Image (cartoon, rainbow, N blue to C red; front, side, top):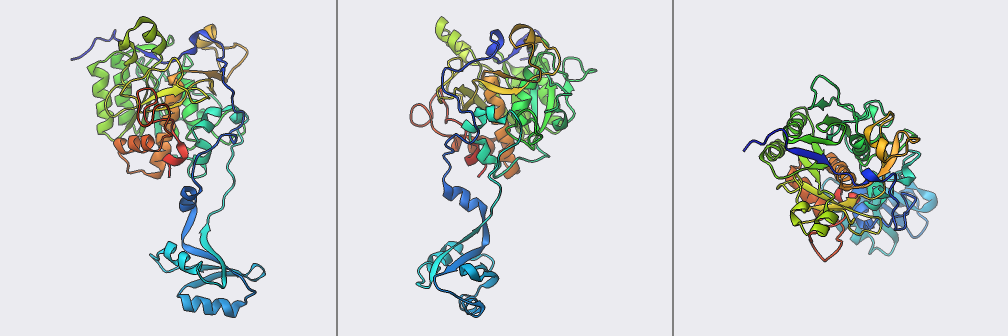
Amino acid sequence: MFLKNSQIYKLFLVSLSLSVFTSSCTKKDSLIDIDMELKNSEINTLNSISDQIVVRFKNNIDEKFVSNFESSNDIKTIKFVKKINTALFQLKPNSDVDSILTELNRDSSIDYAEKNYKISLNYTVNDKKAREQSGLALANFPKAWDITFGNKKTIVAVIDTGTDLTHPDLKNKLVQGYNAIESDKTPMDENGHGTHVSGIVAAETNNKIGIAGSAPDTKIMPIKVLGKQGTGNTINTAYGIVWAVDHGANVLNLSLGGPENETVKRAVEYALEKNVVVVAAMGNSALEAERTKNSSLLKAFPAALPGVISVGAIDFSKQKADFSNYGKWISVVAPGVDILSTTPTYDFFMEESNLDPKIKGYDTLQGTSQASPMVAGLAALVLSRYPSYTPREVKAKIESTATDLGKKGFDNEYGYGLINAAKAVL
């Protein structure tokens, strides 16, 4: 079945009638204030040097002692620090490190034996507004950045209203995009929504301005399928998806939705068949659905399609945002309330009705539109660690590492829970 072009698709944004949403819950004002919930053993395994061990001896020792120890244990000395009675040893390839450490720690002459761990900076970013991005902290992105910033070859296509192609926090992160509405024009954002979504995915990080992106080294492909008013149609949406897939996108973010239709469905299936991860916002109709008792309003597409990572929104108290749609097709939730990101540096449509006209370049919005790109960024980080993963495997990784919320186990409001970026990239 082929639907007419007049079939409406729209973006998911709650704050069209609000200037800046103020959360009723307490905000964390620093990226380092959130409990990261990651076990030290998990980080230690990842950050150890697999074929090296450090041994500290109880009594004063010399080079001859170390040499004899080396011979008797069939290992090689790399370094000996006499002042602290400590030596670094190289193990043979494929050695059982844990068994060797267990045996050495039973030796009465040894104070301790442990793996040689990598040491790095306690990672923070220098973007001036990063401390206002509590959503990234809630989803554990700063810890994930200790492991990976992503891969510059990974591309997230933002299927939306386009992007401010000149924004100082975005211009260096962009690859060639496409305007599916007017193919002879650039995908410049007239509405503002796509620019906000793009910043959440991968705003330039560590450039001492603005914000940090959830996947700092990832590239953004701006695909314009929605116009100035934030609406469009199925054929342009589908064409934008196909164009992005055919031009190298690894992940698609769709912070938009409409009724069930074959056109967008076939385009999403094409993306999944081509090994491209698809992330979509659940939608913001929950309050209206509950008020009118019309449950059909909860089901938006493409979020409800099989294989899609469907994202709901929570607030800073880890409660479902009251506007966020829910249902058995939900995958995970991410912060979607009071989310700071990039906005156009020129006059744009949303500014006329809801954003402070004195502010250019950054502002705070809410919606499942803001939760979805955070998950798209996480998908890009996962692919940087596991480049051979299929969309199914990326989806499973994100779902299986999420922090359970609501009823125990999967539920229709939170899915598998709040994304945990640090666990997902292990």
